[in-house]
Length: 40
Image (cartoon, rainbow, N blue to C red; front, side, top):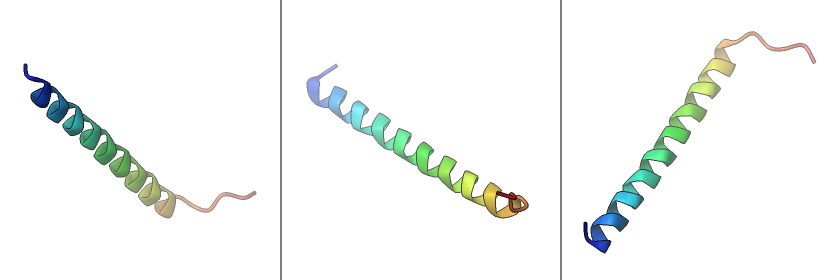
C-alpha cells in the first residue's frame, strides 16, 4: 500500500464518519419532532 493510497483511505474513513454523524443527528432531530414535548 502506497502512502497516497493510505491517505486516501483515511480521508474516506473520515468522510464516512462525518456522514454517519450527520445522519445520526438528522435521525435524532426527526425523532425529537415526532416525540411529544417533554415537561420541564
